[in-house]
Length: 136
Image (cartoon, rainbow, N blue to C red; front, side, top):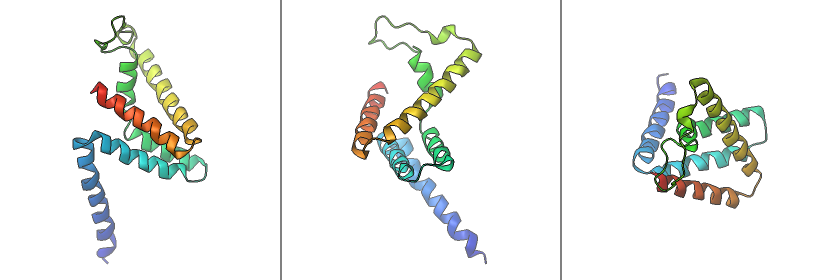
């Protein structure tokens, strides 16, 4: 009787232990791992459940708050001489609206690229990984 809950518990524990080092030690490996999960979800028939799972998978590795903040110039990259820190000029409500809009944009664009062949999506993810690694 006790084994019924023990096996699933061990499987969940192992999945956490196996994925945790990829997150901390290997950012590229973590992104590739999450992309592989998304690829599996994209093979499922289109449905509301699938959309929710894709959103959840994206949310697990995309930091929308940080992405929005940086997109609006905070901090301004030293490599961009004419950069304006627009983020500092927005109030909290405007910042939240911008985060929400960027979240919707990322999700929509990922779905748009999901209609492309897998190799194209992989190239797009590869470019994104290289951009993140350069920015770090």
